[in-house]
Amino acid sequence: MNDLVCLDDIEKLALIKLENSRYKDYLISGAEDENVLERNSKRLKEIYLSPRICVDVSNVSLNTKLLGEKCSVPIGIAPSLAHKLVCKNGELSTANGAEQSDVIYTMSTFSSTRIEDVAAQNPKLIKWYQVYVFKNREITKQAIQRAEKAGYKAIVLTVDAAVAGLRRKLLKKPLSFQQDFSLPNFPKNLDKSPSSGLPFGSQITSTLSWGDVDWLRTITKLPIIMKGVATVEDIILSKRHGASAIWISNHGGRQLDDVPASIDVLAKIGRTAKALELELYVDGGFRKGSDVFKAIALGADAVFIGKPILYALTIGEEHCVKKLFDIMKTELATVMALCGVRNVNEISKKYLWENISRL
Ligand SMILES: Cc1cc2nc3c(=O)[nH]c(=O)nc-3n(C[C@H](O)[C@H](O)[C@H](O)COP(=O)(O)O)c2cc1C
Ligand SMILES: CCCCCCC(=O)C(=O)O
Image (tube, rainbow, N blue to C red; front, side):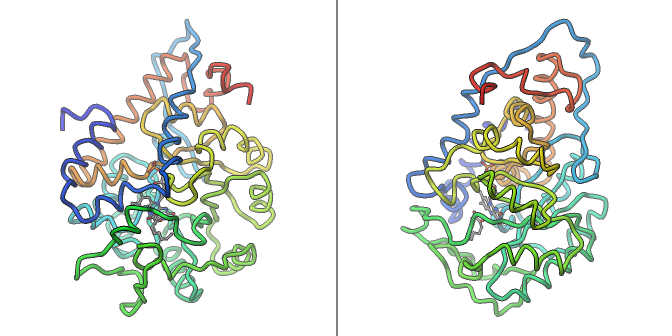
């Protein structure tokens, strides 16, 4: 693992390992022309830093707090389906890697491990539970209440998937699971009917409304995070309906193609979330400490990462998840020091070159 010095190295090695995997296309797919998949990271590279000098940076702290909980770094794990597709111990490895790195782990609705099993293995880890509201609301209610009982600290409501995005690779060759694959958090007889090549996709409701957000608040006391918000109007409505945080996301380019990169959405709408005292997170293409720095400078409280976690699991289960966060921490601390910043609170727009600070 000594040869892995950046997230690109992890991705390259994982893709070699996944070359003959039936799941590779599913993991890497973006929607339609994959414009957004590409744009997310391309736009991050187009933002430059503006470092200050002669600041004592002998002690740089990455510590932060998210929804009142301490984390070692403002980077967390975004939800993604069934980690047993890429490694033997699935989400148990992810959770171990997260705990060793002291970062938040968001479990997907479509997890391949039981909610309670992760909680039992990693009681101290800060765990969030991601929710796709199912057509059968009772099934969703039971999963949320189990997560709350098991000690998960927040509900991440994904709101950008009213229907499945058109991922062309999956339209040509639908994702199919191995015979023994199951979703252990749901009844065994759950209908697997696909939507746009995605098994179980037809479980997700297309009727999600603000009324559902109100309903969620009646069935759980956990804070609600809205994942997939992209406009000022929806931030305001999220606040009105009791959300605690906004997670700017385009689902890693897997849903609606031809939207802006997440970092551009953050630059445009982030200040509304701040003005309404909502915590603010972002994902989509973040691969370097400097990417994280840029997001925080534009108002994010934390950045979440999706595909790299799956690549890390593919290569080396929990050890490589830990390695990934070690790399990100070193990179972020180095960028902070070289910019003359000593802690996360000091990161601001003044450290960005003017091509973005005028936004
Ligand atoms: C294979 C895969 C599965 C995903 N599954 C989910 C999911 O179950 N729920 C969800 O809200 N987002 C899901 N996402 C989206 C991620 O949470 C996240 O928004 C996205 O991956 C961030 O972009 P990045 O991969 O460029 O870091 C998935 C992404 C991938 C790549
Ligand atoms: C939106 C239809 C189901 C998707 C399930 C997993 C997921 O979110 C993904 O991006 O893939």
